[in-house]
Length: 291
Image (cartoon, rainbow, N blue to C red; front, side, top):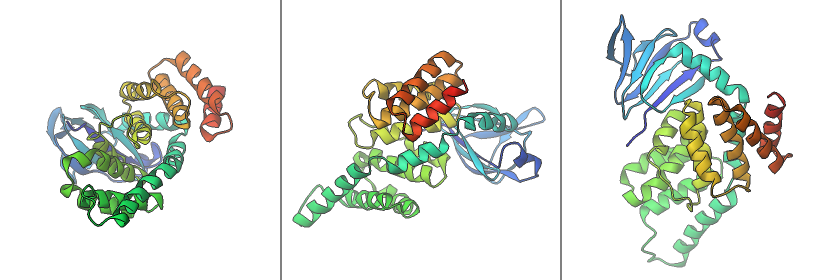
């Protein structure tokens, strides 16, 4: 089942609305509504909104609302006030971890990914009759190579153009890389929609990145409980790696937002102690100092 995803593109805090920037629904897939004089009306792509608007999302809905600038993602049905969402997003961003996520995700698992891609290339060169090397494999291998080179927009184009032709068994990994490209190129709503179709095996090569990315989209959508479930599941299998340090840090953010400041502080301390010199270790200690 698709998760509900709403993408609100914001400018810089509350000043975006004060400056008179247009706000409108830029994409709707599913059931979305806007309140007017106590009544609910269908919300369509192109419909105008403002900071006083109230919107409601039904199940299996993906929506994008453009207000220029930063972005908020929601992933569950409910009623939302645009102004309150903006205020929450300002508080949610106070940890300053967005840049940490992007830097971590674009620099992690590169060697493993490259090895996997080269393995496919090697098999292709070694034999002209390798049956498992389907066209889908080749498209995904090409996209991975582009990602490794930092060509995310080109990789996104390759993946999005070929998705309809992918076999079902290839789709989870395919959708992960599609979502990753959406995330890195600044489309978190589409990224979360793609990740909602992925249920990776913990042994999958891309599982650590999946946890970091989807977990942070849950955090950005104020779905802290779901983020914590995902993070704790990962930490039950890995508590010592670089990814585990990042997941521990992000789980602290979820706990803090849920009101469990004591446990959040413990996890920040743990994340800092795991590698104090790393960017995540420094970020954890900085936040811990302000607790």
